[in-house]
Each structure stands twice: as C-alpha cells, then as structure tokens.
Image 1 (cartoon, rainbow, N blue to C red):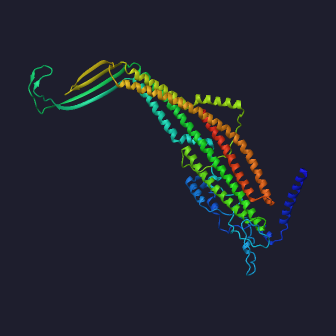
Image 2 (tube, rainbow, N blue to C red):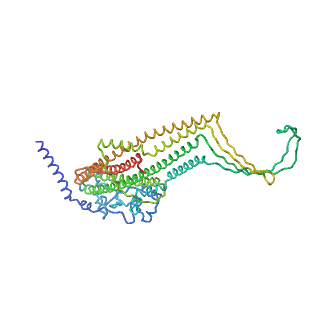
Image 3 (cartoon, rainbow, N blue to C red):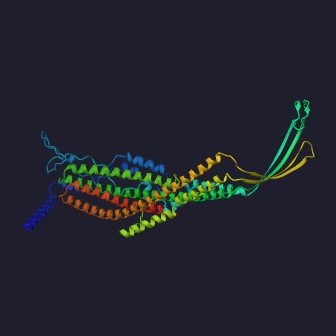
Length: 562
C-alpha cells in the first residue's frame, strides 16, 4: 500500500511538471513571442560604470604602471553604481507599451508576489541598463599582459632589498669589529707627543723646596722657549687572562650576530611566502566573485524572461536584482583586496614601488600522512629538529656563553696586572736639544675597589637573564612547531572537505536551477544555492592557500627555510 501511494504521488508530480511545460509552450499571448527576443543593449557610446573602472591597460602601461593607479581604479570602482544586465538584441514590447485600458476603467494593481495573467495590466519593470559581457574585463592587476614573477624571483628580490637584512648585516659587522678590539690587547701601543710652549720663570720670595734656603722674589718679562718630543711604548704583559676571556665573549657575540642575520633572512622569506600566497588568494577570490556575478546575471535574465511571459511574480526580478548588486559589491571588495595584497607583497620584498606584475596561480598540495602513529612520530621529529636548528636558540646559547665569559672577566678584575713601559724624549729650550729615555714595568694590584663587586653582580644577572630567555624561546618554539603542524594537517583535511563541499554545492545549484527552470522551485532556492557555491569555491581556495602558508610556517618553525 505504501509503495502504491508513493507511485501515485510520483505520477501526480510528473503530470504537474508536464502541464506547466506544455502550458508555457502553448501560451497564446503575444507577449510570449516578444519575451523570447533578446533584451536591449546600451546605446552606442555608453558603458557600465563598473566596466569603465575595470578596463584593462595596454601592455606597455600595465608593465610600467604603479600601485597608485590601481588604488585609484579600485576607488572609482567602489563608488560606481551597480548595473542591471540585460541581453543584447532589439527592444521588445514592454509592459508600458501595451495597449491602454478603455477610458474610465482603472486596471487592477499587482503586488510583488502576484503572478500576472494574460490580459492583466502589470506594473512596468525599471528600464533596463546596459548589461555585462559574457566575460568581465580584467582589472589592471589581473591583466595577462603583465610580466610574470615567480616566488623564487620575489624571494631573491627580498633578500637583496629588504632593509631588515641590511640592519642585521650591519650588526654582524659591528660584532666583527668588537672581536678585533678584544684581540688588540695582544699588541703593544706606541704613541708620540710633540709639545711647544713659551713661558716665563718668575718666582716669589720664600724657601726653596729642594734646598731649604731662602730665595728672593724675582720678576721679569724674560721668557724662554720649550720644545718636547716624546715617544712612548706600552705592552700588556699579563692581566690574569682577562684578554683571553674578553676575546671569547666577543667571538660568542659574533656568532650570535651571525645567527641573528640568518633569523632575519628566514623571517623575510616567511613574510614573502605568506604575502605571496595571500595575494594569490585575493586574485583567485576575484575569479570566484566574477563567476558569482555571471551566475547572478543569468538568474536575473531568466527571472525577467519568466516575468515577461507571466509565469513568475515580479518579486523574483527584484530579488535577482538585489542578489546581483550584492555580487557586484563582493567583486569590488575582492578587487580592492587584490590591490591591498599586492601592496603588502611589495612591502614584504622591500620594494614598495615595484612595477605591476602577475604571479603563477598554480598551488600544489603534496600528500600528508594522517595516520595517528605517523602523525605523532612526525611531530616529535619536527620538534627535535626545531630545537637543534632554530637560529634563535643558537643565538641565545651563544649569548649565554658570552655572558659566562663576561662574568669570568668581572671576577678576574680583582687579580693583578703586569705592564711594561718605555719612552724616549728629546727636549730643551734651545738647539741642540737633550735626549732622554726611560724603561720600566708596572704591577697593579687592586686592594680596595668597591665598583668591582657591583660589576660581578651585574654580570651574574646578565647571565641569568640570558638563560631564562633561552628557556622561554625553547618553549615558544615547541608551541610554534605544534601549532604549525596541526594547522598543516587541518588545512589538508579542509582541502578534502572543501572539495566534497564544492562538488555538492555545484550539484545543488544544478538541481535548483532545473527546478526553477521548469517552474516547480522558487527563486530563493537558486539564490541560496548560488551563495553556497560561492562560499564553497572561496573555502576551497582558502584551504589550499592556508595549507601552503602552514607548510611554510612549519618549515620556518623547524629551521629549514634557509
């Protein structure tokens, strides 16, 4: 019995569908033939505001254009009024051109949800504006005439021009100079002094400090010349190994500066990769939104045609117009996002005013092991390699060793220092001058020097701070590896789910359009299906880009970028 009931329902539905199709095909109204003709195009010389804003530049202009012109283009696009597309062809007889009712007779009004019947006066549709072509013209950044830049080319430009790398390179050069300063204590110092003065020799009365005899007061204007040329030699003989520990500390700081330069290069590479994939995402989303606009154009044309023949209410047309306007706004936002992403990419490579270019749009997704055992083993291996390879950790370990050397130097400041000195002088008032020489050694033994105790405390505090920084950085690296690895696996799963979602959304749209075409489905099903398809396409592209970004971040977290 249940099977017979289902068969009866199927037979009734099939009969209803065929009745609607036959009724539409045999409609006697003259408006049917008129609606089958193409809708009008815009008069010559007029174009859509959105099309005017999106005209492609010539090859020469596109190759040398700047981002400023692109931003101006996007701004003009965002202020352009949305257009209502129509099909090209001669103007059909509109509702306003139908024969008026007899004098004194008022035609009945129709609501948005009312379906007009033959012979009933309908509300006129808004005058149609010029429609879109089958394929929308590309924006300046989407022009195929632009030179193509690969990711490797952009990375090389970034490594050559990014000021962050130049700053790290300058810091490394300063560390190299500090090593030279520390090693200079092994070499003697030699300096010369040349003095000339003219002075008087007046004395006051009193007792001589050398002989103890009384001296009379002598004052005169007589003055004499005095010349003095002296050469000095000094050599650090033994300083309780202070200079050796100073050299060790300087070399560890030099190693830390090298690791900092490598870290800067890795950060620049990751930033360029992230900006590159975000720009690729923005470009692909423009394609998605352009396709959404094209689909909404088709829905609007279909709804207008159904309304003209009297099989659909006017609210279908207005709803399609609203959906098309929303799709246009989405396209404008997507093209603005392309300009912003392009500016971010140029900033990442260190050339903000780089001429326009395009990038390859292929995104390769390598397979990933998703078994729990393989997942955990790979995660543990990634963490171990990160703790071994990360240049941030290696730089901090070098700074710890430098802090230990500084602490040793601070403690050895309490020990004696032995130095050798020699000088030779040639001095006198009148030529020929008299030569003199001196040779000696100096032993310095600190007995009471309170600042030395504070220096030891400061060096110990610096060492403790460096050790704590290493522990914090190690924990952050482990967390970064775990997050990057989980994001990578999740992005791979999102790709698989998004592919299923995209296939289902396309099938759902085909079913909704088929039901609406034969008159058994509402327009809301078509618009919902189109929105779901647009979201599925965006999610599919987003998942692929997220996978590439997660892969780049995981490689950076493991210290494998450079």
